[in-house]
Image 1 (cartoon, rainbow, N blue to C red):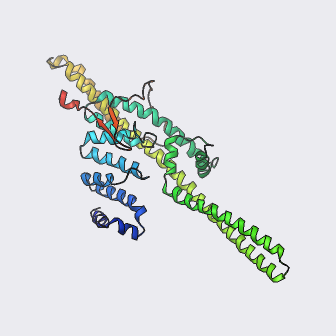
Image 2 (tube, rainbow, N blue to C red; image 1 turned 45 degrees about the vertical axis):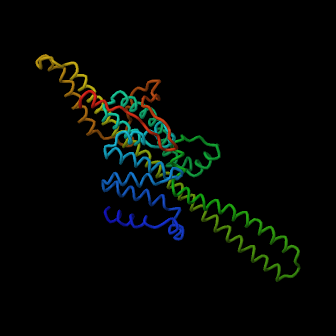
Image 3 (cartoon, helix red, strand yellow; image 1 turned 180 degrees about the horizontal axis):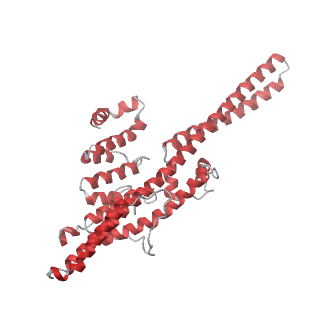
Length: 360
């Protein structure tokens, strides 16, 4: 990581004109994001945040940069900033993006600032939203695996408003590099096919006018060349679609894994929230009461600790049936005060209640 960081630093010493001359200007955002990842891996969170902020909000990679910035802010103790960044994926401009980890960041932040009620509400909201997302991911994974549906065809139909796909899933599919690159080439092939059809039409018309056998033979040769090129286009097109199909299948399974990981970690946060809240309530209720009279009450904290240990060792596999819990009708409400400065830059104010009521 240290060597990579040095190389990236030298890389970004070049001017915009240099990037243009090298034909790498379109790759700058990717390089900026990778530089941020490298610094984050080195635990140089302050510098990583600066690099993530350099990815423009018009870039397809901006949501990834914003999400990574939130992690760096959380791990560097900038809780209010971390919450603001995460909120972009919960109530802000990117709320339709697939981002279960943003709910995790926000829940951790709320727990660390002793906003237990808000943290619990957010966990409920996460369960409601990503239970639905995970169900649809499982559905598409099954359809793609059994070849009942073809991923590329489903995505094209979605873009043509002929197929319903849950928005966070569709958005994740659309922004995959393989789809973007291959679709660009497929679009070029459409133009090539139109040109080929035009050439065939022109050659045939001209050949029909000719009586000279040699001229007709030359026309037939040209038709054979165009036909061969068209067949090559068809073969290349099939390979590009196959690559997209495989990439979308892998991306779907990756999203399932990310959702399961977020759920596992959210379970731990939920136990921590309940445990911390129980400890606080217990401390307030037993203030000034002799220890002999509160022995039974204090056992509540011990039970909560046991639950936390059990959750730590619990493993969820792909086929596990999760207990998402009951979902209240008002689970979509958000208690944190937020406002939009511009796309992707949602700010948040959260009161640190630990300082107010004493460290938990």
